[in-house]
Amino acid sequence: MNDLSAAVTRLPIAGGLIPAIGLGTFRLTGASAVESISSALSLGYRHLDTAAMYENEAEVGAGLRASGVPRDEVFITTKVWTTDIAPGDLQASAQASLGRLKLDQVDLLLIHWPNKSIPLATSIEALCDAKRRGYARNIGVANFPSEMLDDAVRLAALHGEKIATNQCEYHPRLSQTKVLEACRKHGVVFVSYCPLGQGRMTDDDAIAPIAARHGKTPSQIVLRWHVQQGVAAIPKAASAGHQRDNLDVFGFTLPEDDMRVISALARHDGRLVKPGFGPEWDR
Image (cartoon, rainbow, N blue to C red; front, side, top):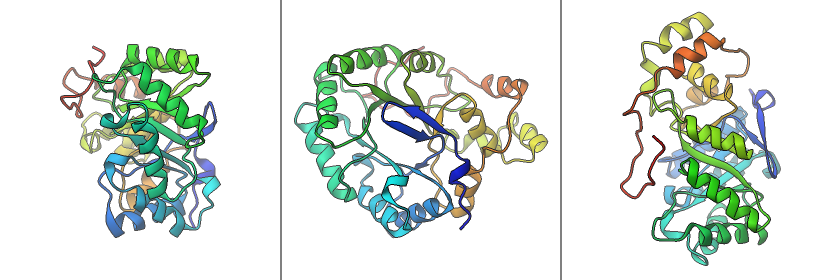
């Protein structure tokens, strides 16, 4: 077994440590998903990210069991969909997710998207209640802009709980300066989905020469850029080859000049995930 898990940086959160590189599972379904998840764990992944909306929690649980990796070694995140974040609905969704995963508890339970028609105060109260019921070791949010994150942290504190993470789209073409600043202010870990810009960064003309200098792939360069910012990234990768490459980003360091070149790729139209029900994003 080529186990890279020992090399993976882990970032502190309220209830433990979250691996800095995880496996995104959106659109992984069926038997191939089970195989991919089991493969990732055998290679050394110790963070699996799923959601009720992905309709693959059963496969994630099956992949975990098929891998033979002990449950307590794997950090598992799932999320409650935006229509289910009212009190009662959120707790029921969390219970249903545990049933599909065949787990007693997840490591991280997130509100997947805010909902303008459901008061944030009631959603956060329900999320805190889910944690107290033992459904999750940690709680967090996803797709929360900076001011909304401020509110979520404040509201959770009223119930004696901490928001551990904020999972948002992030890659070199999308600046997330304000959200990153808010996360750091509150001690919240930023978790990046679409960290490779849905593959767009792998053939970027600015990334290629940096990759060549370091003897790395463009994907490894971009993921290293995330890691050096203290960001946890969850790239999707179905094949063992891509999984291995994405996990192997801890044996080198990008100099500040390279970091600046990559960060300078941000542009005003860089956001890829922008559903109509989304929040008002930071400008």
